[in-house]
Length: 229
Image (cartoon, rainbow, N blue to C red):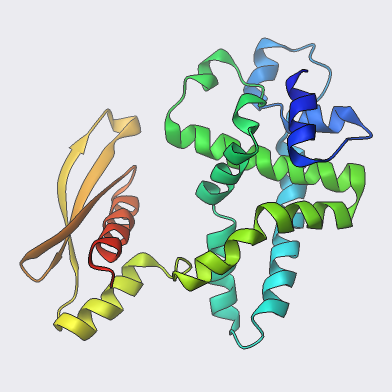
């Protein structure tokens, strides 16, 4: 059984046009080493799949949370379709072993691999939409993505962690969280920042990221988990 057959079995969808599935799983870098592969890379399908994903998620949230204002619905949607969530979902359906990459891309950083996985997942949605229609694509999104929505809302994962932490700390401790760079590592093009968040003079938690903003968000998330605030 090749990996195209495996992924169809995993997701429970048999493609009429197998070239659409092959295209969805073909990263741009693969064509550099295999110019005669026969199908294009997946970026056009990703463009289409992103739009289908956004529509299905938006329609679901609109009907499921009738009392929620537009701003909150936007935040929930953003939490559901961010690249880290989509990468985890893609990983759960074994897409990591099916995506066709160049040898160089296959050795890339964990973060770059997450982005590739998330993009391929959107490409797969685009391929399902073209091959099977809107209803099949919507069912796939419902099964794979919308199943996470209740958890995101129940645990306030849709709220910006820094804003959420600030609200709670100001209310409980009457101070504003402050963020301090604790260290930097790695080359300039791939630097990792470590940032600590403090409540007044009290150290609360630390986080790492590929930018100061990303590290601040991670430290805020870790503070929320640590103190269950």
